[in-house]
Amino acid sequence: MNAIIFAAHPDDMEISCGGTVSRMVDAGKSVGLVLLTDGGLGCVDKEGIVCWQQREKETFAACELLKVCVLSEGLAEECDFFLPSQKRCFDIAKVIREHQPEIIITHDPSDGHSHHTRTFELVRNALSIAVTDVAVKDQTTRELESLPRVLLMGGLSCSKFIPHFYIDVTGVHWKKMLALEKHKSQIRTYRDRCLSLPSMVATMDQFMGMKCGVHFAEGFRFFNQLSGTIRTVDPISLFLSGELSCE
Image (cartoon, rainbow, N blue to C red; front, side, top):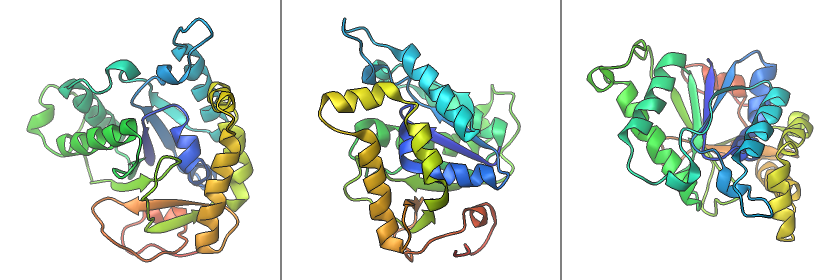
């Protein structure tokens, strides 16, 4: 697997990096998605019943469109997401070891959504586990051959997110929006609050694009890097060692 997205909720990938994922897949890279919750609390019917099954269907429909493989969905129910769980970190570490990704994309720790920051913490700890032999003593997966490049994505709940670089997603933005529209339960939830989720995402991408001189863009930060040059980056160069190439 060339890249793995670790996201808190079923629509987070489409919102934050759907265009980048589409460009990676178009370039022949394999991309997998791991969801850390089932997203059940974001889909409640008129009787107050959590509809996690609906969100699961939406996830697979969106991933089918983007040609992304769902590797492991809902490692935890959303209601117990904050309970201490060493097993959850080991499960994530096992996914990393099994699929040997070159790139990991997850939420930025400055994200204002508590589930997103929790996901970052779990992935960070799991990556530390994945690179040590003794910590996975009961696992059958092979050792991590190389340390993956970790990218942090922004989102609608990020108010202090300053990207190190941008990916131009103008040419594939239509596909990103089609994938987002598969998440009908979330679009309905936003509409009930007099908000349009597609419009909010499109505006966010336009704002990112304005910062780097394109129509639509997605911004990313490097893990453990404090600053960087603002530029648009060829997504394929993310898979190469050394300096990133600009577009």
